[in-house]
Image (cartoon, rainbow, N blue to C red; front, side, top):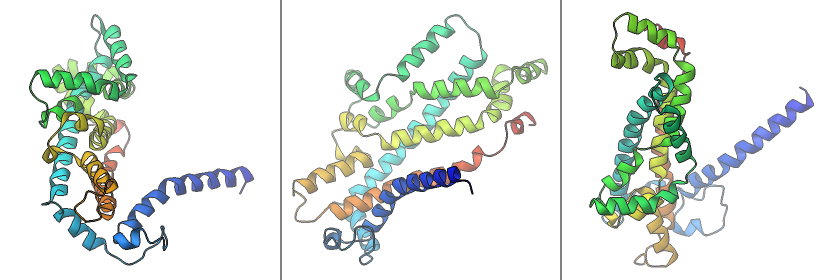
Length: 281
C-alpha cells in the first residue's frame, strides 16, 4: 500500500469518527436515566439500559405532546417535500427544455433567490401570512415549504444533462403530447434527480426551526425541533414541574432522526441504475 493511500484512509477514518461519535453518544445517552446521564461514569459507554423506560416517559409526558409534535413533523415534511418536488421538477424541466421569452431573466431571478438566506425571508413571510389570516395554522408552515429556488435550479441542471433532446423529438414525432412526453420519457430519466430533490426537501422541512417558531404560537402545532427546543428551555430554567427533562430531550432527539434514516434507506435504491433505463421504457 502506497504511503499516500495510507494517509487518505486515515483521513477518511478521522472524518468518519468525527461524524459518527456524536451519533454514538446520542445512542448511548438515550439508554441512561437522569442520574446516570450526569454521573460522569462514561459518556461514550453504557451505564444501565433504560431506553424502554425513556421511550415510555417520552410519549406519555405532558399528555403525550411529543407524539403530536412527531405527527406534525411528518405532516409538514411530507406535504412540504412532496409539494416542493411536484412544483420544482416541472419548473426545472421547463427551464431546461423550452425556449420562451424572458427565460434567462426569470432563471437569473431564481439563481438570485438561491443566494438569499431563508432566515431573511421569515419576517416578510410572517407579514404575508398574517395579512391572509394563516398565522398559527399548519398552512403557515406548509405553503412556504413548497417553494425552493435551489430545487428548481438543481432540476434544471439535471434535466439539461440527463434528458436528450433527440428522445423528446422522437416522442413528439410519434404523436405524444407535451404532458405525455414529460411523464413517459423525461421523468424516468430524471428519477435520481427527483428523488434527490424529494429527500432534500423532506430533510429541510423536517429540520426547519425558525419558520415554525415564528409562525406558530400554539404548542399543539409545533414540529419536533420547536417542541424539543421548548423542552430545552424548560429544563434550563428548572421549570419542568419537578421532572428532569434532559433524558427525554436526548431520547426525543434520537427518535427525531429515525424517520430521516428510514427515508434515506428506503429511497436510496431509486438512485441505482443508469440513465439509459428510462429511455428503454
